[in-house]
Length: 101
Image (tube, rainbow, N blue to C red):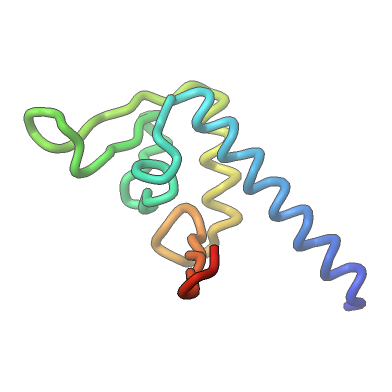
């Protein structure tokens, strides 16, 4: 595969990834870093259109968030992009250097 095709496929995946994040947070009001990006596949129940948020401030410690059809579609797409990894989203952390940003 040529470098141009690799770049195009990677760009398409990044675009889909971002689109899914925007659709999910718009439909569910999940917090991006604390709830959505940290979400594991085991916390997503597409059959029942719900996700569970562990470590929430609810009495039992797990919040249940209902999903709209648009959010279910976005999660379905995102889980396909995620592949075999346990998390729904790939997280890459920025490394800060001393004196840098």
